[in-house]
Amino acid sequence: MSNEALIPAATVMMLRDTADGPEVFMVVRHHEIDFASGALVFPGGKVDKPDFDPALRAYCGSADDYDDKELALRVASIRESFEECGILLAREKGNSDFISAERLNALEGWRDRFNNGEATMLEFAEAENLEFAVDALGFFAHWITPEMMPKRFDTYFYMARAPQDHIGLHDGSESVDSIWITAKQALADADAKKRTVIFPTRMNIEKFAKRKSVDDALAQCGDVVTVTPFIEKEGEKSFLRIQANAGYGDPKEDVTRGL
Image 1 (cartoon, helix red, strand yellow):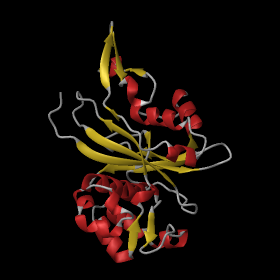
Image 2 (cartoon, one colour):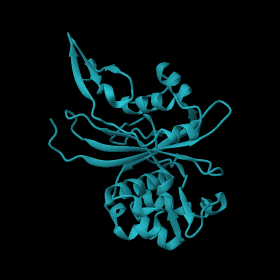
Image 3 (spheres, one colour):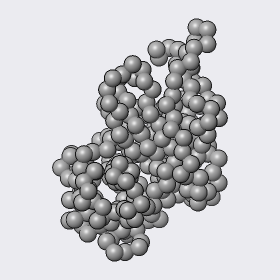
């Protein structure tokens, strides 16, 4: 059992509607990243200490609706989605619309600064007169890494409708490829071994697959049961399981060879 403290993390399922149903933006992790290397995942990562800066409240929409931890998680998810896929949930301060593609392009240099640990979200907001749209995020899922793992993450999954003219593009460092994909296609690719999809990602794709539109998906946010997967033995085999009341059915993944 790991005695290390849980590492707070946040990830965003960035969504858009298409004729084939809602799509989600996903990236392929670099093979040298220490978590989920080479896997198809949603943009996200660890919450940084500066994401908790109380001064950020002045630069977040509806900030008073969230306690300090929740606000930091939402700020981190916006930072990570900007870093990893170039989509920014932000408004010009005092404006109700998301920033335009033209404005987003002018902010491109900040992505490298964030990736290199050379900037904070407060510095970004102050320098560019931005307000982060934390209120545009729907809380979709909460997963905690199993106790037997050496590094444990306390991960919050959010959903958001991507601003219409923000295209999305991987950063080339933490992520080496990216795609807009329907849940059906992502699951088919995983089943065909075309893509690596880790258990929590697959479970949330399956849950998302039941939604007919972005509005439908966002309407289901907020009713979240915390999931901590566990190992269950059946004879000589070991299966990764989750509790039955979490809204994912009753999945079991054979992890016998991985233990």
